[in-house]
Length: 423
Image (cartoon, rainbow, N blue to C red; front, side, top):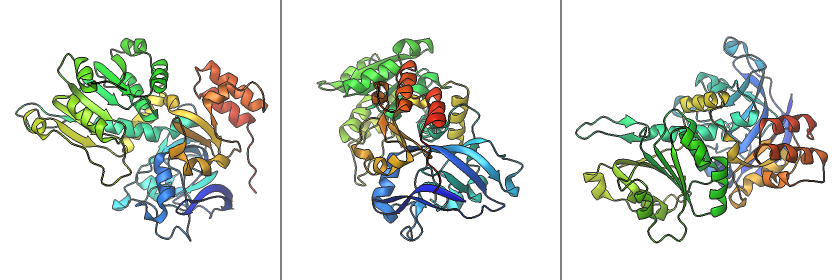
């Protein structure tokens, strides 16, 4: 059968093509993709081509399908997996397979599977690694965002602390402690706020900083301090732009004790050093932001490492259990990653959005992989009063949902949007 997909051939060489898929084997699964959210890692893969550690060297002659934050419906199941999966199931995929120690991953390494596609063949290694994850909740876009949410959940689980005189790591954020998210009013920071307020382990104090007033205002509108208080969390939003002593001001919010957990969401040396200055005794700094500069570095207070038992950890993605937790919390309605999404588009917009992602404002760009429409900001969509009827109607729906993308909007788009015929 034919599929349409965005394929990578080399550095900045992305092509939207229609081509034939091979017949799926008895150890494979045929699936229809509905959504894929674009990640900065996709942009890096497109920029680096075969130089990327996950992209194969022969990509110029055996192109891969790009995109790894995707969701869809299982349409056919090979006999080997008939006892575990069935046609009609919705799913998300954990792309970090770790198959036999390889770095291969859907969206980076495979010819027949990736998120920016209409139809894909899921290879046996995905199921062997238990990385094809059924989703029982509503909406495809939520399942797509389970991958970035799993990265945040994994980061929270990776935090570690010790007790004086005991050499045992106690994993996870300090429940009932003080937590700070720095440079965190962007999409990933908002996802972390959602998880820390509504998830299973919560801090007593959660401070969110940024230097962009508009982003902080949006964050406060989406996650009000009153709602956090109802869940036992004192939530504070702080604009640190122009502060003479930001670290001192932020430490004062903890009554001088410092923070148990500090997360850094921007690869900026000054932010890392500020995070270090915020750590209390036995505090743990999580460098979540992924730098593009392999020589990126910042100063760290090793006096405090020695005498105050401060810790440093870095995470780069979540594991399968983290993704299962994300899917479960979404299915239960406890977390909602819609705040991450600022733009939606059809697959015809995916190439330019991927190549120019570093220049585009806002948060996550969500692609509906079988539809033809330009990338559009949800804020602009809400202001549509004329033009194509479907966009006017989508704007009306998003306005009813506080300016967020939502299940009603997705269902309306899938029913009324311009679906591409398979050529």
